[in-house]
Image (cartoon, rainbow, N blue to C red; front, side, top):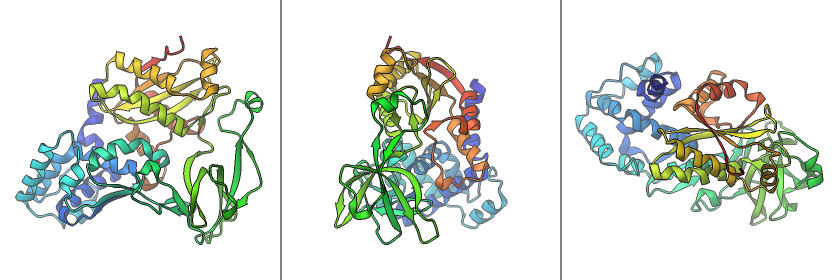
Length: 411
């Protein structure tokens, strides 16, 4: 097991194993070569930026060597990448010394972005919804630079833009762009408790009303968005649940709530992706005493046992003691405050939550899996709830599980 872990954590395993990872290494290298020209740091999703700087922590010395000698590492083997980047390189010992001193002088890599890119003004990307778990680490890397949350959109088309980019990502709302497509909104009401008692499904059930237009939505209400766009999509349901937070002139300002199909549920409980995120954030506070960090996480509803239970998968940046992880497991269980979950746990209608700690590099394997299937890295999101439709992902998680803990929070 130790040999596998050390291989996963080595720079060679992290960076040089695929075309994309080699491209990322060269992207970092080019950014350092032209560091004074960089005006902002950007990627489609916040997790891509965090991943890039986690990689920088591991390979910065190799990058310094490339800058110093003006020769691209022999471990970059993709011909097109190697040819393109080699044209840009020439020996630059002064720059290499400067990068080395700055990296050595950083305290736990805090503020690495403004340190290495002194003319950068901000960090830009999608930072809401499923990207919020990465904000803490992104702020650590960004130091005093502002985080600007990008516009709200999907592969089917853009929906809205932030009219006050100075707000922190957690408070950002998006004003709908009324002329970029035709938008309708399905008013949503959660089913009654009696209806919930009759279901054992994997998705949240809403009572739906007839769609309303852009100007008919009400502040504080939740809706699912329907889009008709110029590309030919007609009344396409996006599956996003949003809440109307107000209006900018006459166009509504939306706050993303969750995806309709993403829900943890066993009995009468219903915990959304946001509920999972809040639970994880509460539990990871226990890691801070040991200066540990959560790299990534996902969840699974295990119905193979009776009763069914929540399974949470964590990847950590270093080993944690059993006592701490037992505490994290209990905290995760208690942090789900949904009334249906709490009451079901108390009467053992839902089994004890299980925390599984996976090997370092596991979520990289999940990304690599999706890339092999043809996914675009710029559009990749870690699935927060896996199920039977994620068979290979679930197999990766199970195969790489190192330790398992069961909650004792409810006796």
